[in-house]
View 1 (tube, rainbow over the protein chains, first blue to last red):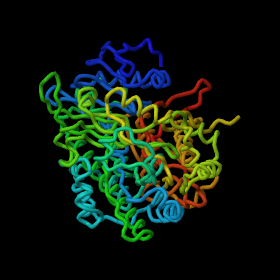
View 2: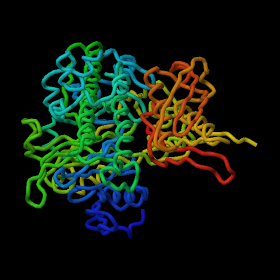
View 3: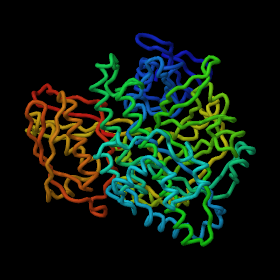
View 4: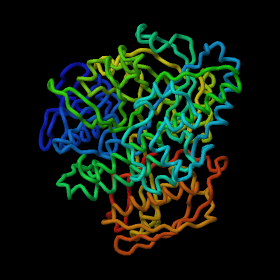
Length: 476
Length: 140
């Protein structure tokens, strides 16, 4: 991207003053190298977001921003319903509430070594992954609605987890205001037997070793110690979320002119928050959030079953569960005044700072754990939310690395079987139903997650706590 | 001269599908082939069973997205892959038959599940040589 398009606020903050129909400025948090690499589409999309009605303060792009659908992936924008603010299906994305959760295993990397192969094989066998896979549960209409209302709380009531898991999940595992009636039969049909499945693409379940600590105090509070093994699960709301996104995107495209909304890009389709369509989407999207929370909770249960089978008495405890494709109603202080806003985070992680009432009591004074997933074979990170981040990005940070090259380019450059061998020689086991899928997700096809995390830290969005290195990866 | 074909075009995170043909219906059929090819090798999918799909939309571009999303729904709920399509168009209404078979992970090696067809790079029109084309990015 051409840097002359920006006003440099600091080494990590680049501002675009409002022009044309922009209502607020646009701000990109990144270092110079990341910004230079960023697609020009991010500039177009983030300035388009700044044109939407009711947007507050600024449209933000995180250090991992890339070309998305209407919103850039890595986009954050808050809207005030009292000022004609909108909700956008594209601003949430197709995979509603896609996110990451990380669990302690209580194991040291050295303890894992002799059982790693077996554990990877059993996790791959027990956790459905990839195209066409189905879960162990098949939900009838009543159970589907109960799941969509209850989220991870529903899963825990059915025996898939504990109250302690809920305490470490955003919204205590259940997004209030979900309206299963606003979710179509098609969407429910798509989900009927997909609860507890990983999906495909960049979704995974990974065994990781904590290899570096940057913030000893926060790491101690999150109980992260070098040499210990954790499990991270990255997946979302599966077919149900995708179908909700598809259907509401179309409805919003058709309805926008009627609401007097001029769309700079059709994909930015949105509806006023206080309109019937906006409210319907909100109800359906919140049901999608619950679906994702239930999904990650059930996968957690399956993971625990495998651990217990191989290591009787093992105890996996949840560190935290974050969602990075959402729109949430939150209180934020803007120009010294408290306001109720609807914050869209498309490929951006909520990163609440210390003292926030939404955080679990035992972590409230330190801040929210922010889990940043790498790509297959690359590092992941744990960060912590900061007070500065609340000011700078409505308490939001990056979500991952973001692709550096297309899937097609990746398959021309790498073969799945070579990658599996190469990673195995580095001590990273890959288990996947599709070698082509492995090639498409080659580590080299992604940007350097470390640079992204460093920029998020330096920009003050969230603070680095620990680095995780992959040991085994179950790919969808 | 080949006057009906499909191709992929790059998108940073996802992938673009483009169908080209002598008629709009043929371009829609080719776009569907391009979409299956995102997931697997078309030659591996036997056109053994058929499924009927119908949709309508206010314009041709929205109709393309509806058509592809209709197929994605069938792929997801029936756990099938499709390799042959017959589309008929009347106004902004589409009726189609898709032929395919249930997913066989070992044989098809499906690379990635398609979440939805999007409005990104969505275009339907005529090429300089007078052929129809229909394209958009699909989210995977």
